[in-house]
Image 1 (cartoon, rainbow, N blue to C red):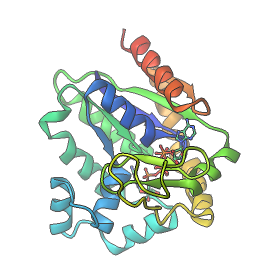
Image 2: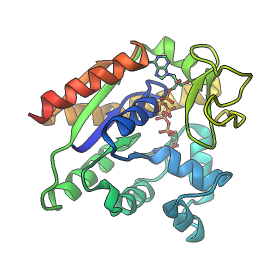
Image 3: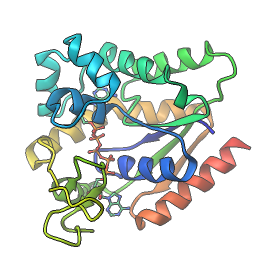
Length: 232
Ligand code: AP5
């Protein structure tokens, strides 16, 4: 399957779709945001990578503050996280990168790494599009399960029972940066630093845009058919 990149503004559904693709294709989701939150909050049992970053004191206070403010953490830190994650054998047949790369420097780092890796397939980049006005509701309504990672939305698709995960009954949580004031900064950061990354991959050719306003299952189908077409 090779590397699949999911690109798009905060709330377009990158995490939701990465989980669906992971289930469909049996390849891992690599979410730099999830790894950073694991290290920052360490409320759940951290993964081996989060454990290493934690014990090495790898998340400086200024990076934690940047996450809280809706700004990006340093390229060096996330590139190191991705390098460590890509060294795991479960990425050999492919992986879905969710929320990375987010700057041109990260995209160039990834391009160089992949071109230096024998046998690695070219990246397929999928840009998920959702109108700006719909994103605020998605972000402020989002809740997720700290046990299984399932993502809900209190307005659009709430859990069956009062704020408990349908699968394991764990109380759902809201992310600290999912408030309106931080959302506005996240959008500004996206437009200034990540929109150029979308153009970078558009220029490379193995690129598709999908309508992220459709129901979740239909978005998944659009991504799967775009990947099949671009991998031919
Ligand atoms: P990160 O965690 O990556 O956040 P983000 O990019 O802002 O994206 P989100 O996770 O908010 O949204 P999503 O697109 O995954 O949407 P979701 O599927 O959850 O990053 C957080 C922070 O970490 C950054 O601000 C930065 O500080 C730092 N960081 C991370 N990566 C970095 C990097 N590479 N470099 C530097 N810093 C980095 O869906 C949202 C909601 O919509 C949910 O409620 C969901 O249920 C709902 N929904 C999804 N799809 C649909 C649909 N089709 N219809 C209706 N509702 C839907």
